[in-house]
Length: 153
Image 1: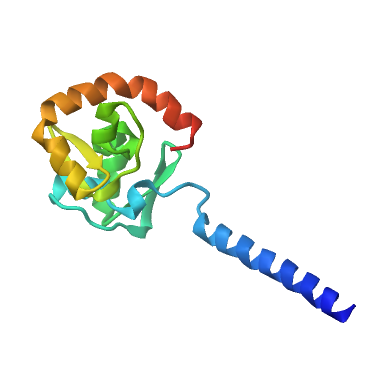
Image 2: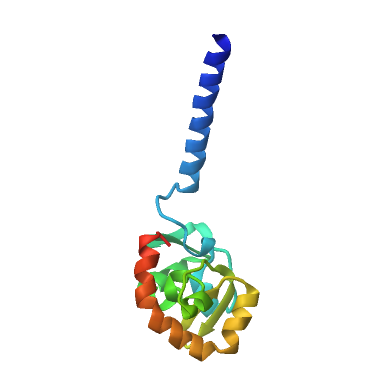
C-alpha cells in the first residue's frame, strides 16, 4: 500500500513539474516569432541577430523580440514591412505548394521583403530561381495561409 501511495504521489509531482515547464515555455502566452530573432535586424543591420526577451512586442498573435528599443519602435510603426513573407514559413516550400518550417539564419531580403528557408541548402536552391520562386510563392500563399492557420503554423 505504501508503494502505491508513493507511486501515486510521484506521478502527481511529475505532472506538476511538466505543467510548470510548459508554463515557463509559454510564460508570455504567445508563441515566439522567429525563434526570438530580431526581424528588423535583417533590414537594418544586414544579419540575423538574436533579440532580447526584455525588448518585445506582441503582433499577429506572436511575441517578437528585438535587439534594441529602436528596432521595436520601427517594427511597431510598420509590422507588415518587417515581418517575414509567408508568416515566416519556408519560402522554397511555399513556392512548391506546401508548408514547412524555416530557420531564422537561412534568410534573404529581396525587394524589401524578408524570406526564410528551411536550411542553408534549401535557401541556395530557392535563390537559383529567386524571382520565379517568389512569384510562385505569392500565387500559392493565399490558399496555403488558410491551411497554415488551421494547423497553427
